[in-house]
Structures are given as C-alpha cells and as structure tokens.
Image (spheres, helix red, strand yellow):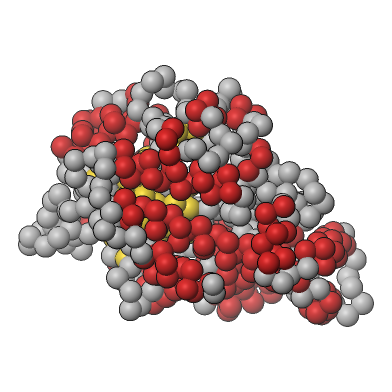
Length: 493
C-alpha cells in the first residue's frame, strides 16, 4: 500500500454508532455578530486550574476577554508543565478515568496510565457540563510526551525508540516509537476511550519531534543535541524498513558517519571540500539514510491516519486535528517532510504553532545548530540570510533577533502557506498564536497591541479559527484581552 493511499484511508470509518455519550458537541453553541456561525476561538489549558479553581469564574473570564468557545485540555500528559504541577514527584498520565477495555493490547497497566495528582477526579467529567453551560466545547489535546518520568517506568520505557547505537531513548529528541504495536494500540485505545466515554467536540494530537537524520544534524530549535541520539532503530522499525527494501545495517552505518561529520564540524574540523559537499557525499554513499528518514516521517503520518480513522469510526461528527511543532516553520528540511497537503485527507483542522515572540530566540537557536553542520561553510549571519530566503522570511538581524522576536507578518505568511497547502479540502487552519509563551528575560515579550496584530494577521492569512496559545495558565489578562479586542474589531466575536 503506498503512502497516499494509506493516508486517504483515514477518511473511512463513517457510519458507526456513538456509544457512551448522549450527543457530540459538534454544533456551534453560539453565534457571532450578525448571526453567522462563529469561528473557533480555542484555549489550551492544564488540568491543575480545572481541578483547583471555580470553573464558572475561569470560563467566564475566557468568554468575556476573548470570546473563547472551545477548550483544549491537556487531558493526558507525562510532562509537568502541561499538567500545571510541580516537577518534584510528578507522575502524570490520564487526568480522566481510563476505561481499561480500550487498552487490552498494550503492556501498560492502570497505574501506568492514571494520573494520581488530583485523586479520583475525572477532569473531563468535571469540566464538560460546566464548559457547555458557558457555550464552550471541550476537546482533548494529546501532545505526545518527549520525556519519560521515572515514575512510569519500566512498562512505558518499552514503547520508546532505540537510537542507532542500540540505546533506549528516554527523552527528546526521542519518544515513543510510531511503529511499536504497544504504543499504536495505546494511542488508538486512548482516542477511542475519549470518543466513546465523553461528550467531547473532538481531539487534537501532536508530536514535537522529527526524524533521526534531522536530529543527528542538529537541525532543531533546541541546538546542541547529542548527534548520537538519533532515532529509531528498534526491532519494529528494522522489520518495517526491511519490508520496504531498506538495508537497516547500511542505514545504521550511514547514521554513524553523519554523527562523526557533525562532531567534527562542531569541533571546527572543516572537511577538505567543505561542509555541504561532505554531507552530500555521505548521502551518495549511504542513500539508506534518506530512506530511513522517510520511513520515520511516513510512519508518523500513518499513525495520524489511523487516529483519524478510529475517532471517525466512533462518531463521524467529532473533529480531529493536528498540532504542528513550530520547528517546522524554521527548518526547510522538516517543512519538506511535514507536508500538510498529505494530511488533508485525514484532518478536520490543523494547528501550526506560530508563536511570533518566542520565534526570535528559537530561530536563532536553529541557526546555530544548522551552522554547526551542513551550513558550516557560512557565517552565522549568512546562515540566517540563506534560511530566510529559503523560508521567505525577512525578520531582524541575528544580533537583534531574540530581542525583537518575529513580526506579525510571520504569522500571516505561515497561516497563508498552511491554507494554500490544504486548498481544495474542507480542512480549516487554526494557527496557534503566542500569548505569553515563556521566554528568557532578554527576549521579546507579549504586549496587548502585539497580540492583537498577530491575531489580525492570522485571519488576514486565511485562518478559519484560532488557538490562543500556549496555555491559559501562562497568560497575562491584559494580553488575552488584546486578542479579544482584535477578534471584536474583526467582527468575529
């Protein structure tokens, strides 16, 4: 089965009955000025405030300040900042109640999955009826974990990737393996559990990772990663690669050679014929490296299609969408791999993370990593210029980039690019717009005026909705109000 045919299968599965909930939250619950159906104005939120605060007060604040009509709960996470709790002693997991009949074919137990931080509270059970009262639909936001807390080993650890040295990964840039049947079954069980057991509006899934070659080359907004921690060469990936005609051992040798190239580059050991020539020569010698990179990227897309198919088999009216890591907007390499057109057939919405304030520091970090590998023939300033031309950006110079952040024009351009990518499909682009995403003291910070400009730029770029990002618990009230002011001026709330 070829890649496109597999992804197209993600649209199948309609017609199954919806069990376990009275009716889906698929219809708009409010209208915009003029009586038109409203655009989606979504708010991600940790579980902690939902467990500890007066929900009527929380939801009234969101509605009043910014017209929020969709809540995206981090309902399953093993990362403390997404749960909204302190790291010390953190366990995490499912902040709803796992219904174990959906998890039969995984090595995970109830203790592995159930989050203990708030006792027996079921966050979805608590939140959904109160949110509905305020005209807010509830979505589950499943942002795949990059870290593996010691509290949930060893059963979780068996689902994680294996690097090309044979070591099990436990954190970024590694993560759970898309080809591991235990992880596949867990993920599909989780989305079926949520879809059948709760009256939700839909599910958004995301993965802030990239393939092994890009990890080895350090092409990431988090530069300085160990080039030996590439992924994935587990037994399931090696079997799948072999079935596709890829020599796994040759691929592993190729990754070894790329790792050596990067370590030498970082040590200032310029290849005889230059960095780019040496890198290209490695690809010619080991074409299996590119084939292995493609195996990783297509495996993620296949899992996304399976998620879409599973949710739609429960209830075709539920909306299924994808969070897209911001690194995609910095990396022409990952941009090529994460072609949104190839997700259009298994998507109701796509949320590219377009955090313009934090983008300055993140892109500067990406430039450093790129200049330490395949762009080593260039100065850091020239690397920024080349990447800017490749990505069609014209932002601040390198020495001012972090302090300036990215402009609202970045938000508009990237939104428009995403909209063009899915043209001809009934897929909406809901960009994630920066409201107080944490930055360092010397980096660009949000203002109400800046937030308003970014929101307006997103809709000028063709957005069908917006996700105010990245977490309600991080936002300054005046900056959230800036988003609301822009939406009102646009006549959207």
